[in-house]
Length: 105
Image (tube, rainbow, N blue to C red; front, side, top):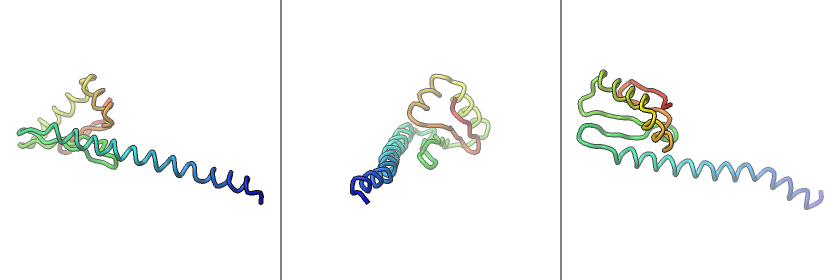
């Protein structure tokens, strides 16, 4: 087989693998950034962390867990269009407090 054809086939096989590796590496960096940002928001009333495969879920843990408070936190965040937009721009897709989870809009 012509060496140029072999090289072209090899390039066709390797390009998607290399591109996928670069994309995965970039997503892991963004994932670590989301985790650091979420943790920096913590205070005496609540702790924040990023969870999920690529840390796209914003998990809120309050010092006094209460279902009503958690529902209010999640609902008010999702309905606040500007806050929801800002969280999405950071790569978060969902917000969760206790068992209350909603997708950011």
